[in-house]
Amino acid sequence: MTPHYVEPLFRPPAEAGSLIFQVAYGCPHNGCRFCGMYKGVPYRLRTEEELAAEIRRAGVAYPRVRRIFLADGDVMAIGFDRVHRILAELGAAFPFLSRVSSYANGSSIARYRESELEALRGLKLHTLYVGLETGMQQLLDRVGKTERVAEMVESVRRVQSCGLRASVMVLLGLGGRRYGAEHAARTAEALNAMQPRLLSVLRFVPVLGSPYPEFELLSERETAAELLAMVEGLSLERTVFRANHNSNPLPLEARFPAGREALILELKNALASGRLDASGPGILPAEL
Image 1: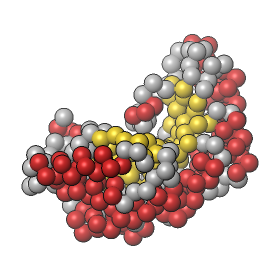
Image 2: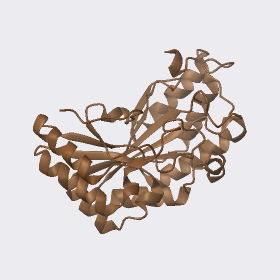
Image 3: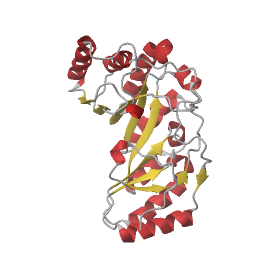
């Protein structure tokens, strides 16, 4: 029996092969003006009894599952004790389980002691997906994300020092033309301080009804130029870099530091080629 899902349901592309359990419905924060994922969805935490019963049923149906993703937004916000019990339940139900992942905010991670993060790692917690979005605090405030850049940096560093993996996401074009240069520079600075194991760069594309009406969409060429500026500012010691989401003007992937110069050259060649749309956004995901 598959788990019961309440739409909308989201997961990172890398979790396409994972079994998903919804620990909660919606997002406990849900105030980001750039994000339309859970708008109109009241946040509701499922009862432990309901979730445990679902886990046990799925364990009987799919005993060889190895990867699990816990949804919805910011599961770490529910606190150590509850996350610990959920992971223990998963370990008992799935004998071949190798990794569990979820979304997390820096402010939620900050409430965990290092000993607690290590205990969760011992129960197969593996990857936390953290939306930095931008390293520019003024821009974060402007778009309604109540996180602090410094706290997100420290949280990612703590997570990784405890043996967990952080996958950090940033948004190209979030600052429009007005803040683009500073957005790229400050984001590179924050990423250098974090040193995430995984870095995903997506392009911000406003959704219908977005509460961010003043946003100025960059052209395809401007987006690639912003990405180049960001990459040129990166000094990463051991990071898998991906900008291959279909929102991006170019599908790119590299391992830092070895692939940094080739990535810069590819971006410069694309900008010099004239094939990128300089007057419009190019093909957006809704048009693909």
